[in-house]
Length: 184
Image 1 (cartoon, helix red, strand yellow):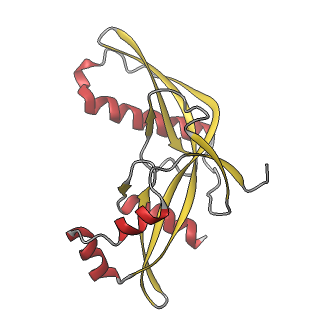
Image 2 (cartoon, rainbow, N blue to C red; image 1 turned 120 degrees about the horizontal axis):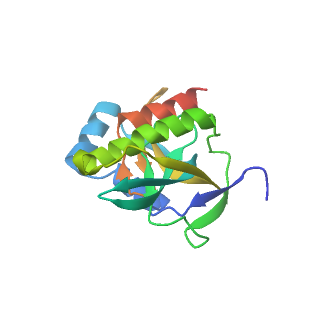
């Protein structure tokens, strides 16, 4: 494989579907265009995610879940998989539009622990018998696809982000994440 070839989850949103979503006539999309200007272009970009197996005890039963966390800052939302992604869910893409992992393993594990605890607390804090999480990083790194939409006039551009797997427009946290990457 070429040095710019990565393994990614298959996107659930094509380029044409992303354009339609960014040009939508919905109230929020119209407000965005009014505030930011017209859609100028879109680009696909891929973020590296590390995959982890997390074990814990809840209601007296041991539970194992598979999570993926971005390997750049650990700032994006966690992904959860029912099982480790297999070859049918993955594809190889040759691209320069990809971020590189920067998160050290110790920091990554701490951030993952915090995020997983937040997920568990949202499901019912009092169900937890122990706060002991066993975290195992799996030997799989996958990239997740996003669509970036650039709006504006002339040199001024505003950025909107769509998660191409979850089929949703992301908020300010994801926009800031990608703006930092573009500025570097």
